[in-house]
Amino acid sequence: MGYNLSDRGRRALDGLFTAIAQANGARDVSRNFALAPASEQRLEDLQREQVGFLDRINVIGVRDILGQVIGMGANNMIASRRSRANLPRKPQYVGRLQDRQYQLYSTLFDTWLPWEIIDAWSKFPDFAQRYARHVATSVALSRITVGWHGITAAADTDPVAHPLGEDVNIGWLQKLRLENSDHVMGRNIVTAGDIHTATGTAKPIYIGPDANEAQGDYKNVDALAYDLIAGMPSWARSSTDHVVVVSQDLVDEKYFPMINRPLADTMDGGKSTSDQAVSDIVMSARQIGGRPAAIVPFFPEGTMLVTPLKNLSIYYQESSRRRYIKDEPENMASLVDYNSVNEGYVFEDTDFAVMAENITFGDRP
Image (cartoon, rainbow, N blue to C red; front, side):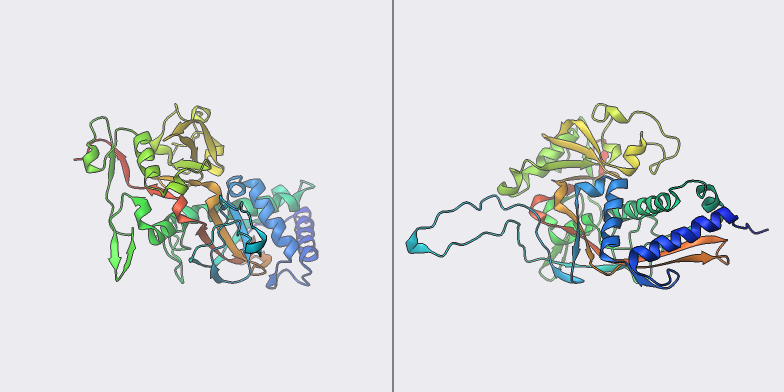
């Protein structure tokens, strides 16, 4: 027997449709419409409010679907002097221009909510805001998951075969493997023509008290972090903005004492110890390799990344967001919200990023 939406739920839903239409100048929200610039910015702001990790990185609107990486890192030296004999003055770009391109891919963020939930929420006067927060959180967490796990941008994705969005877009870690293989440990190098990428088979890194460093193994995570940082160019190595992003399995309660309250149901089968670890960044009071340590949402196990968080970016194409939202009784009696945007993942400067993957505890067999 199907579920019938209550009169109160119908009024709340009609109010939601009206609010969305007015905010975007849309005549009918059940037809495909583009988000107005103000609505687009509100959506980005709301995602940052709901999932603070997005507030630590760059989320940037760009005009073109293909273009040059902006380079958000600061130029360390812009000071100069000019005598009259050597005029004119020569301003310096305050970022770091690199001959690297970004490419954006159309990404769908389609959601549905059963009418039972609509009815339950309709008693709240902030129904529309509550719904907006719910969608924003889902989109934000999906973007972060793809950012860490994305390998390819398939024409048709398969959520069963790739539950972490490995085929939705090319994420940050894959970008580093492709664009700066010298800064990746734990994976074999693949050479095609003159191009070298760290996309080969796993080359495990072992951490244990009897590890043999001559084999590329380490006695603790600190030693690995120091070695990673040493592999950066000197100008990048000296940055004070680096953070050591680690997976939960690489650290214990001495590094993250604030997250030792068990959760029954978490993304990693109970290893996470606070809701904050699931949906937001958790900074440690202690350091790894002389740099602040952090656990971030959905970061892959057995992995360590050293980079300033502002070196990570999500680019989206301005005015590319499309949406339509409607009742679909044939779709399990639900509210269906279709969203799409062109977006991509970028390291602003790969010189400032190093990573190790396929890390495991124990001595090399």
